Amino acid sequence: MTLLMHAIDLEGDAARQSGDPIDSALTAIVLAYGADPAAEVDGTTAHDLAHSYDHGMALRLLDRFSLRRTKLKARFRSIRRW
Image 1 (cartoon, rainbow, N blue to C red):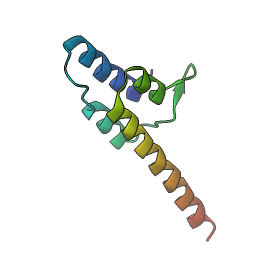
Image 2: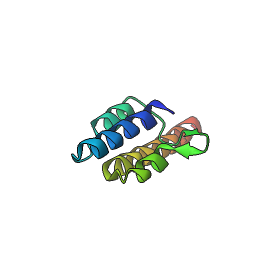
Image 3: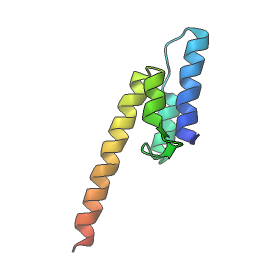
């Protein structure tokens, strides 16, 4: 399990056990520090885990950070061509 997956699992499990709404602070922090949202462990991604917990905020964060990486890669490719 990656650190990002662990953060999502912790948030989802804590919400299930307590009955409180799911918090997404850990997921946001781990992503802000550079966690790879596309990393897989045994064929499972952080997106899969967030989906299993119905963790909507984590899904939105994962999508946003995935788009950010794609845009940055494209930008760096265009800079290297110079």
